Image 1 (cartoon, rainbow, N blue to C red):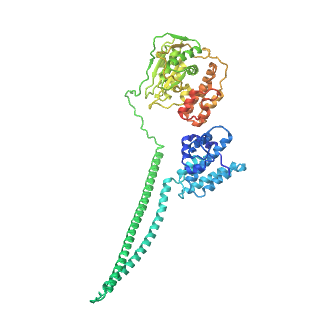
Image 2 (image 1 turned 120 degrees about the vertical axis):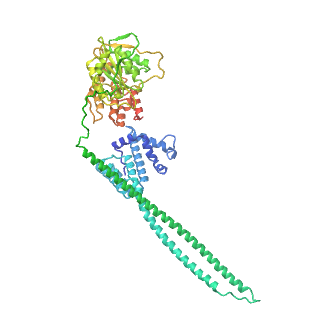
Image 3 (image 1 turned 90 degrees about the horizontal axis):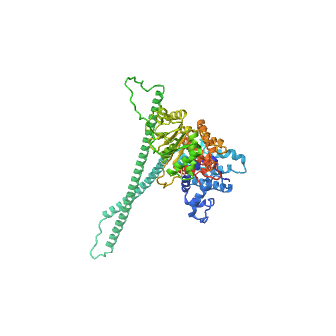
Length: 633
């Protein structure tokens, strides 16, 4: 026989379960069975092959080889075989009451024989369906339960099809199996008690006959005339009569004790029968109550559905009430105010290199370590000149946003903190322009704090109008709290979302370090001489990653991210990190997390932080994977 190898879909499903769940499944197999499977488990250093103490380590080694991507083909094949053996051992242990289970599993293995490739293509799936169809039928014979069948399929090396899921979901649940088992056993117990009562009745009748016989004997003895003992006669005759009376009394006492024991036993059996009858009546009553309650719930649900269907064609909302009363504002306003600064000299910035250097200096003053500060400065500058919007999240997001604005916009900086419940952003752009005042040909900056305190649909258009009609950079921060709205792809249409918590921060920053102010006259990459490299960005690979979730495509995100990546590739002279790694940090990772791409797909594409680099691992991506719990060694 040939053990079926796990399908790619099965391996993907098992990886998603995680090491903890798989180890728990392995540990459900008894130690006796595990020792029998030691011959197929991988060996580990420091233990004998037959050592029971090595079982936990050997199970972990099996998981490592089984879930590992790539590796030696023979080692992978051995791991696949060992996993199937464990899965079959679990089935044999927890489905031992299923008739013909071994034959059904053997049929699957026979259908997977390598010397019959035409069979492999068709029959294994049919045999697998036969197995689960049989388990479905056996559940209604109370030989197994739906929960056990579900766990068997969940950890199986087979692909889960719609047919298998229907068979499993429609099997008989454990509570119904246990109830029916009790109901099936009670009549047999009642029959046994009835037979026992008949035997006890026969014993009582026989004992009663014996007692009656003894009573007659005693009555006859008592009626017998007392012997006359003449004077001088030998006492032998008297002693003989007394001995007979003593023997009759002893026999009478013996039978009396026997009758008492039989009566006590009969009383005990009768009480046990009465308790069993009461249990049966209670179980039957409970079953009727549950059935009645379930029927009532279904009837109530049907009534609710009927009412909702009846309301579909009706307009339940009342007509608007016309009133001449003045409207009262019910939403907090958004105040745009200048950012307070020290009266330090402002450095005029003519090139992108000068701007990146000042950004690096400011980030270092906040405690970012080198070379991470310079890498992040290049990315922020590239986002500023391509989309004019960037989002920062994390514990230092506000400080980073203000330091960024100060480095690029000098004294032309305003800030606004979005209040909870804010809903009117129609005049945001005009308020910002009015607060900035005369810019003297320099760019301005808006630090928009806690932007996710309100639905971003209310702010997105106003921000787009602001950067379109004015020479303004928008640096927004995302808050972390119960009143905030979830991140959404609409952010990425305007700019990247940088998670500052995964940057390399110093625990002990330099004392008395201050941020400096600078001023840019333009956000045009050409005017800033940012074409320093002739490298070409891998935009096709970036587009493939952005389209990884086939249920979603956003051309505007693709355009903004591609422009950022191309600008960064031309500006950055180092290839550590690569421009694709930087774009993944600001765009790809946030997009995948927002859209719910499966963790195993994220881990596979990001490759532990390497992506397209053979030598450099982006520690920010690596930390993001670790914090999300989806990176494997």
